[in-house]
Every structure is written in structure tokens, then in C-alpha cells.
Amino acid sequence: MTRRILLSAGLAATAGLMVMAETLPAQAQVRAFVTNERDHTMSVVDLDSLKVIETVKTGRRPRGITASPDGKLIYVAASDDNRVEVYDSKTFKLVKTLRSGPDPELFVLAPSGNPLYIANEDDNMVTAVNVENNELVAEIPVGVEPEGMGVSPDGKYLVNTSETTNMAHVIDTATNEVIENILVDSRPRVAQFNHDGTQLWVSAEVGGTVAVIDPKDKWKIIKKIGFEIPGVNKDAIQPVGIRITKDGSKAFVALGPANRVAIVDTKTLEVEKYLLVGQRVWQLGFTPDEKLILSTNGNSNDVSIIDVGAEKVTKSVAVGRSPWGVVMVP
Image 1 (cartoon, rainbow, N blue to C red):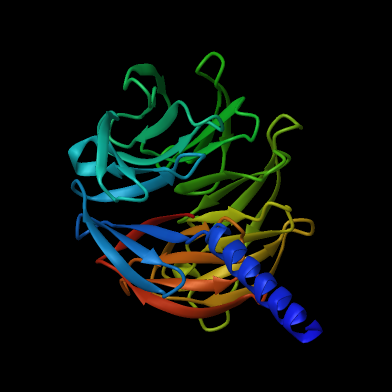
Image 2: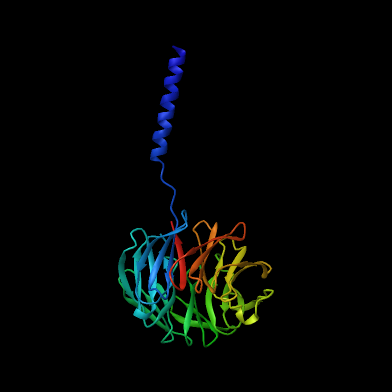
């Protein structure tokens, strides 16, 4: 009798565990969204299988890409169609389009998710658009060929880089006016704040440097970081995309035709390591847990997957032609 009771109790417990297992939420599936500039498409990469699971037709020449704070929407700059396209991150369907001004390239959402600040390369303007009703919030004159867009964690400051003026323009988001112009090296591409807002990093593609700026000290340049790679011509080292870990300890910098991603210690501002990736590495994006960072490699038509903890490239995944931007959501 005792054995039967124990057996029954064991079966009941097992059944209970099975029921609990069935009711537990599934693990979030992280997907990477990659814009392919020459194919006019967006590749959706499943990061579990490391395969492209969907190729979405977009507007012409998709470049900049970002996600809403809740990860439900994907924003794509269709540069040659002069619009921003908004996709559902689960169904991959086009939800709506937003005005953008001419030739949108890079953009950034306010930390709240609204408005969207867009660099319009052809008219030397930053356009702010309300993503809910598609109304124009502001048009802000900046330098020649605006591209990079960064916003401070508190949303108070917007920074645009102008490629031909060689400046980073600091904009007060309360007034939508430029309050500071910072001269950096030639052809600045990307502006990126760290997560506590104590540093602003600006890459200069032709100048070959990254300027680290102190927003708390009158936007002064703390240091210009240079890069040297044995066997690689100096002219091929062209910093573009920048991503900084949430804990503020490491910065990853895409170095263009050098086919490398640099890992920089944000305290010492020294380069610690170079990782060999695909050809003409352009932009970078973290997974939500920051265990991986992906690089878009425009000439080899793939993305490289980097293990952040191990600081090594683990795999490459073929996507469309000239992958440009990348963002990842669960």
C-alpha cells in the first residue's frame, strides 16, 4: 500500500511539473533586422538558427534602422523614396509610412519613443516627426550633409554630425535649436552617447579617429582615439558605427574597409583588441542582453556575429546586397 501511495504521489508530482512546464512562457526569440541598401530589402535573421527567415521588400535604398522602445515596431529609412517605413516586428508587415524630408539616412527616437529625429542629407536639415500622427514637429538647420544622429539618455540633447562641415551639432530638444558646434575630424559619421550620458562618441570616417566628448564640461573633446592595425593601410581605417555597452565599460567601433571592429576601454580610451569581420564593416547592433553584437559588412554581403564576453567572432550570416544597418528585438 505504501509503495502505491508513493508511486501515485510521484506520478501526481510529475504531472504537476509537466503542467507547470506547459504554462511557463517561452523564451524570447531574438531576431535581427538588417537593411540591404542595394537590394531594397530588409533581412530578418533568427539568432537561434542563425538563418535568414524572411526577406522583406522595402522602399528604395534602405539605410538607417531602429526599433521602438517596446520592440514592436521597426523603423526603416527608405532614402531614395524620401520616407520612413514602419514595420511590425512580429509579422514583418508594413504598418505605415512617415514623412522624413529629402534623403533620410540615419535617425534616432527620443528615449520616450516619440518624436523621431531624422537626418536629411540633401537639404542640410534635421526633421523631427511625431510618430503617432505623422505631423512635423520641427525642422532644424544644421551643417552640410547631415548623417549621424544621437540622443542623450535623458532626451535633453540631440546630436547631429555633418559630413562636409566636419562638425557635431548639439541641439536642445526643448527649443529645437543648435546650442553648440563641435569641430571634429573629417567626415563625421555616427554620434553615440554612453548610457549615463557622461560621454559622447563621434566617429570621423576620413579623419580616421573617434572623438570622445564630455557633455558636462562645455562639450569639450576629451580625446581623439586613433587606430593602428598591422598590415592595414592607414587610409583603409575608417571609423563609422559605434556601440557602447550598458555598463559603460567597452565601446565597439566599426572600421570600414579595414574589415575590423575595434574594442575600446571607455575608461582608459585605449584600443584593447581588433576583431576581423567581413568586408567594409559599416554599422553595429547589440542583442537586448548584450551577449552578442552584430556588424553589417557592406562588400561581403553578410553580418558577423560577435560574442561580446569572449570578444571573438563566432559566425557570419549571408544577407542581401550591401547590408547597411542592423537592429535586434526579442
